[in-house]
Image 1: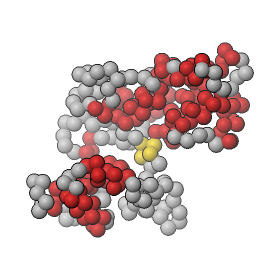
Image 2 (image 1 turned 180 degrees about the vertical axis):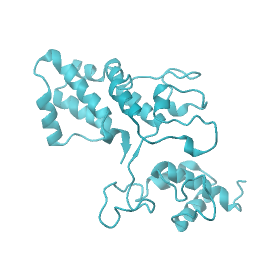
Image 3 (image 1 turned 30 degrees about the vertical axis):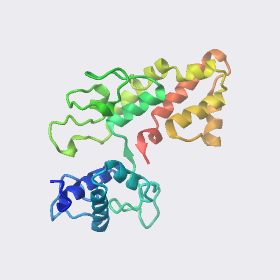
Image 4 (image 1 turned 45 degrees about the horizontal axis):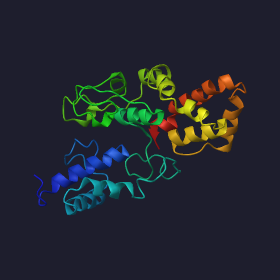
Length: 248
């Protein structure tokens, strides 16, 4: 099956890896490989397949090629010439993080740990190998139950349950309190402005704009007894923002 003379093995795997990072395959859906469902860019798919074969099927090198490409680094912002494009990779497509990745991101940012059946405390959701091991968060956000080999088991469509769980559930509110990220920074003597900058870097990988910073600081109560709650509310808002939940 993995013989270099078999053109389908490397093509299909390269397409699956590409789809993982772009949200859409060069052949899409990735499980629907047939003559009547041609690839959107045969030359690109062949080049990826050839490199993957040359690498002796080294996934890390393939991932590096994809993630360092100009195409992967494109913004989701569109212009008049590509605003209608959904398959030629002329711009990035906004897509929500998968259930496991989103839960792990929340855990890391809030400095809290998960416990899954059969795994030690602190294990990541992406390490779960058993489809029967799950929790409410993963089910709500569409983790595959792995009952079939079809990639369609992963549900990426947003729904009301997801929004309510992030707003009112223990995925954000209780983790923010138990992780003590804000409380620790206050104890260290950091100012509200420094804490807001740190929270933005944690959640978005960037500092707030001057407008964002000014608007948030204006909402922080001067009473030292209320500063912690106000800053935790800011943290909660960031974790519920589209910029955090979506790859863009």
